[in-house]
Length: 240
Image 1 (cartoon, rainbow, N blue to C red):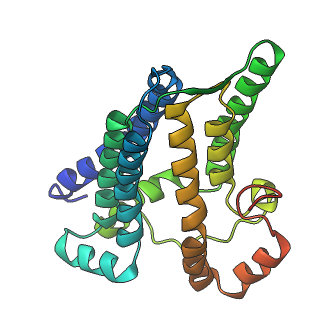
Image 2 (image 1 turned 135 degrees about the vertical axis):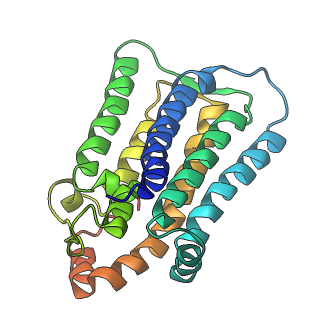
């Protein structure tokens, strides 16, 4: 491995750590910080601010996911760092969103007893399903490490990934998004702040799915079309 590649590898690996750290910060924010019940007050202003914050995250994902933008970024950056740059920026934006998320007054419900245990169990199930669905993906590839390794010749070129249709992917087409919705909505105490985060983030995922699937059709062709006909549920059974 050429010595000049070490700085690029450091960027890729620290980007992976930044991604993991952003998820930990989200968990802490949602489970702890967003659990505070805010006193009664104005709701429209903080909700609009939260929508604006999450729109920045959505815009980043939508713009940088376009092939033309990817090609431009690839030309501007050292070889193999396009995906790592995407991961770094997305992680920092997600941390900023969780940090600056505006508290929304009110408490929609607060479960107790067996219902509270059930809610915690469903949230835990959401985390378990996220891990299981992620097993079908190469996290290091998503974070950009594999891309860089292939660019510098320290990893062999592999054929494009096969379409996964078994397990959780035979239940819903986007099990990671289903797991997300399960986690954010199954909280035993739904404060106004949590409700805003759950609704806004899930709405973004629902809007993003058709755009994402257009790319999957381009990648997998008729195989994905057949998969969509067989597994009708995109994200939430009986809903969407």
